[in-house]
Amino acid sequence: MTVDLRWQFDLVWALADLHLASLTDDDFLWEPTEVTWTVRPDAGGVWHADWSDTEPRPIPVPTIAWLTWHVDWWWSSAINHLTGEAPREPRDVTWPGEGAAVVARLRHLADRWRKVLAGVDPNAPSAYPWGEDSGHTVAHTALWVNVELTKNTAEIGQLRLIRAAQRSKVG
Image 1 (tube, rainbow, N blue to C red):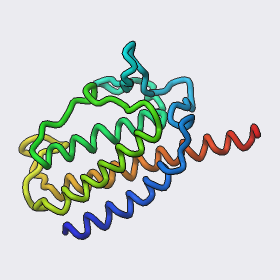
Image 2: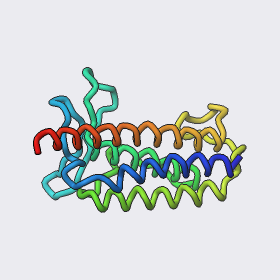
Image 3: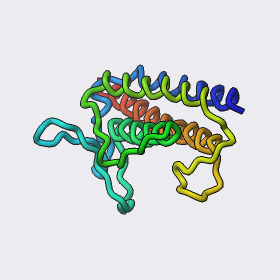
Image 4: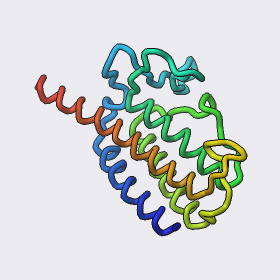
């Protein structure tokens, strides 16, 4: 099972890395609509994501920066859970502030995830992200990570392609 989880992850990560490698710094903060969630620097220059504990209406369209922050948050939380560390709250996760640092951070998480998958029992109980007494296993968590990464990668890729198409119309 662990071999299959790693195979699936490597497939998803290949697509994620393809999109991440093609992003420009301007792509990250591009706002595709008036109603968006993004990341913003505070007075000290630390970047925080827009966040609400309840989903707003209408649902904001996230920027690529927000999506990469979101991946950082849930993925590092999954790794923390499976390695016995306390997962961080969304407000405790900051965005690095520039594209190359974001991509490096996500590549680091991919490397850590491969190591985590190599060292876990897929049949062991796992409460993340469902909570205690869910009946889920580490395999469920790993499959969830792969699906969530696929979804976020598709969103990043779609925004990247729309932005590129708009730039080509202007130029």
